[in-house]
Image (cartoon, rainbow over all chains, first blue to last red):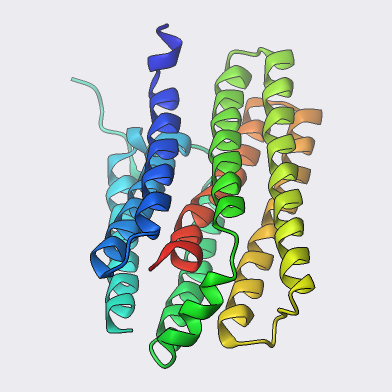
Length: 83
Length: 183
């Protein structure tokens, strides 16, 4: 039971949940759903960086990648809303 | 009080693999930015293109990749414990799921081809085939890397191979919403 609650298993569960939620959001019309889909994608990216790639224990690097991911999603979101 | 680790000491795994991860993120990021920039000029055409895509297949592929990522991460932990047999089984599982991803992608491409859709049909599909095709090539390379790590499962090899695999996963969780999901 403890193994199921390990950080890796919880990360995997979060990735599955976010993927399901964002797929359901995709069939909703409107730009709010689109922005939510992008934010879910960014969150999944962060989970992979921190838990799968191990940046949870490397705060300086984690902050750097957080910044890059945030800038990318901001740019993508802006372009999406401009379309 | 413990000594603070240097920036380099903090970084898990191989520095050069992280350079690769960062550069791949930038390359695919540039592709996604270009995709959405071109979309501004023809949102209706892009919406029509998107309607041809197989959301369920892409959703299945997302589940395959995030689960294979879990197996790869668990393999790193097993390798550090010197549990070689477990490491190899987990890497094999990750690679098999990767092959599953490629299989589903092949079916998607074949289905689009049968519907007369190709790389020159519309800019949407030019981007679609280039971005997802380039990503699929990374998945294929990644399965070879996982196999090599399984053949020589030192903790360093497994960690480096798994890092490449997580990069492939990372790119997909960003590509999937941009190409398939944005309404």
